[in-house]
Image (cartoon, rainbow, N blue to C red):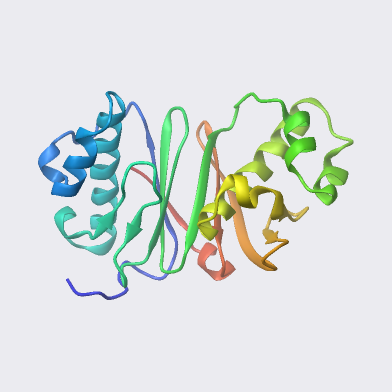
Length: 221
């Protein structure tokens, strides 16, 4: 298949529980991926193999091709990439699930358990902007935890969209009070974001063009 934009014009999402049955056949990996897997400790190697096979299966279904034809480059610990003309992808893991996104334009996603416990007040005061803190400072307990979680999901998705880093970019991303857009204060870039819930999980999707979120499809895979 040539380098052409295929797979549709909307953003597609796939979510998978970690305990779900997956292909474990190493023959589905590329030679390069087999080398990467050999350098990983167990069970990290098994997780790497299954996630790459899963990504190829999802993308093959979307693009109408075989899994072997999907031009995926996804080294351990690095953001996954597709060849030019095949669109853009983003991957996120939490303790018991995995989320994959595809879009014809750059995309970022983040996934967490909706009930994740963390020190919301301390995280807000350390990492959020002054405007964000002023919006949240009066909140307490479960309401504060939910609001901080949603903003954190959006910030991480935005950083993945940017292909930036938490250390270098977290302090610059500011989430709107309506939770529909985020702005990078240093780059003066504003993007569209969307929050979703599915079962026990909460997720955020970030794209530059809000039109890509209007028909965003979520598949259980």
